[in-house]
Length: 117
Length: 162
Image 1 (cartoon, rainbow over the protein chains, first blue to last red):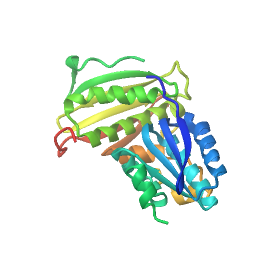
Image 2 (cartoon, rainbow over the protein chains, first blue to last red):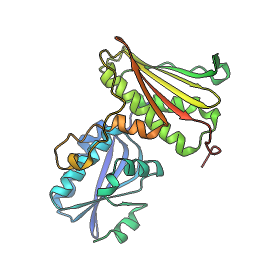
Image 3 (tube, rainbow over the protein chains, first blue to last red):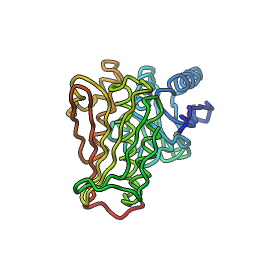
Image 4 (tube, chains in turn cyan, red):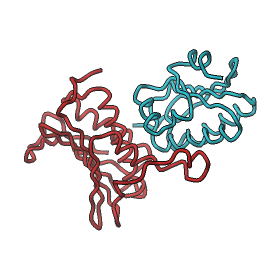
């Protein structure tokens, strides 16, 4: 089975910069994820939304990468949000307590409209 | 990679039926092939979707752990996976050629706050995830092999599907 790399599109939406993630979040995703987050940071947003709707695999190394982004966001007083996770990965975000530190929404619309200020 | 034995040729091994035996070269990314093959092998058990998703994550993490820490990602050293079932339980045994003490099964829960503060490495989630995805995780080993056994209790599982 060929490993699918991660592609990330960065776009500005009212109230947030959205990172559209496509592919797998594993150790090979580090460069793409960090580069995309740096592009988001350059826009100096208050909120960065990670959209996982097109992500089909996250492993423990991928969890570590997300923890790293969350640490960067907290250090610069930004809020990192997540949306589009499958039920399974919502469970993993709960087990790892990632969801204690980043709000998780079902989809982008709810994230952008219901994100607590 | 060696494909599993077809489910129609399962063997009797005491009270356990062997559903598949896999040989996985220790190369990054092969854990995904392993988890999909194990999912196919257990299809006949009709596990609920959520249980199957958890098992797949546990298999992927244990296989990745074996490839990385046990076999140091030497492609010519395979990770061996045996999938078997009794009436009560599903077993997945994942064996590498690691030496020394096998990984401690009772690792502490990762401290995400310490990780966010930069006081711990962001990594270190693998064994924690495995333990939380299955009903039992057993670790054994000798001088030349380490085995992680994943156990899913089949009693009390709801009917397959969502």
